Amino acid sequence: MIPGEPKENPHIVASDDWDSIRYQRDARFVWELGEPLVQVLDPQPDERILDIGCGLGQLTAKIAQSGAEVLGVDASPSMIEQARRNYPQIKFEVVDATRMGFHAEFDAAFSNAALHWILDASQVASRVYNALKPGGRLVAEFGGEGNISAIVRTIFRAREEVNASPLDRFPWYFPSVSEYRSVLRAHGLVVTDADLFPRPTQLEGGERGLGDWLRVFARPLIEGLSRPEKQEVVSLVEEQLRDEMFEDGSWILDYVRIRVRAERQ
Image 1 (cartoon, rainbow, N blue to C red):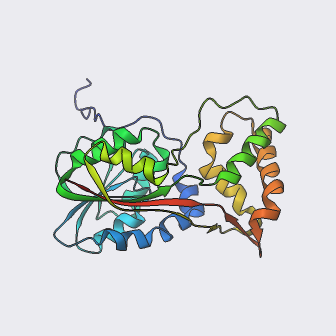
Image 2 (tube, rainbow, N blue to C red; image 1 turned 45 degrees about the vertical axis):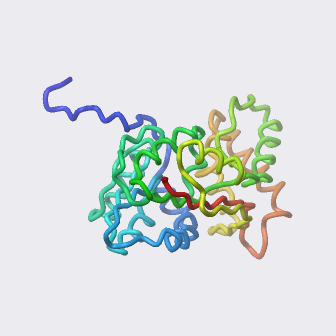
């Protein structure tokens, strides 16, 4: 180790393909629609709370307004860098949720629109259990079974039309309530409330809204394509979904969310 170099943090992941500037510009709906989840969490001034997949920190800051002590963690260094600029008074760390090393430190764990990005749900559940104090709670909402199903089918058709090579894996984890309940139960987290519900999501940006969304959120499905191929896929997806999802000048996407509340026994 080079003298004076910080010790390696085993939680930090090196790869980072999030564009935090584009995300802050085009993804306001993520934290705006996530605000009701903070009410479900019901943070208290004497609590210590972990925000998993905190992104740019908007909901972390909402939680902090209660007077609770909050730590925001995200696997993306660029997201954490921007979160620190947005809210310098709050503590943020670059942490991979599958490698969290916390031990009975938090009264609650919170996560909005993040857990569907982590394929190893079992490992996350184990780390959340370890992070919570006995009796601590998890409140989370993310993509559930059927989320963006029409969009995914259309992207795959568009990839075939541009003769793109097949993808080697599906990039998201969209579970049913029963599946996710089983994952949590296997790691000592008892679900006290769970729901799967459609949440049609209106995008900003008018005509360009879907294209912006695809470039930010569907990156795993268009990565590896050349710039012309990506543009052709985006154009094909826009064309094929217009009748179904473009209404009164806005794109409305077929989001389905799973919301859970669980407790460590």
